[in-house]
Image (cartoon, rainbow, N blue to C red; front, side, top):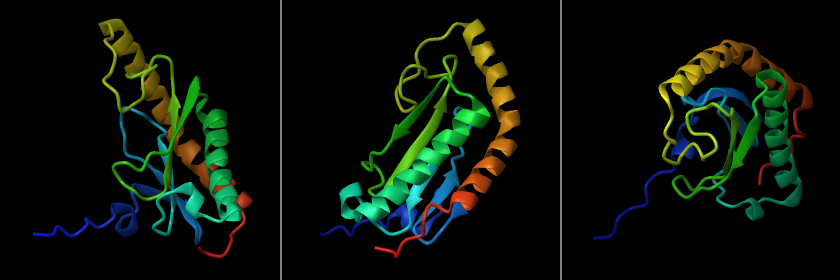
Length: 159
């Protein structure tokens, strides 16, 4: 018996809380309590690889990723920002932009890896730090939305 392909979740759902969109892409706040500020940039059309986009569209897509990173650095002041684009689980073109702090629950490992062992003191320090970051999130999302709107990352014809 032939299995039908599963519908693409990013074609049928926002993938998080919508922050901003244009005809080509959308920027999503990811609900990941362990990693405040986690943001996704998702191409609107069902494309699986960056090289399937014309070069101008790729440039606009990456400009959105760079703007997200820039606003994260300014507003959240992380120690590092992780950029990831896999598509193994959801084969729809999207980037993860993840602010990281040296005391976060998974640092220096990827957020999808097993968390390193932490002392109770380290866990408490991260809980307190995360609470401070969470207080900044409304300002971060507002600044991100304003930056994306102001730059509008050059709307191009849909591909």
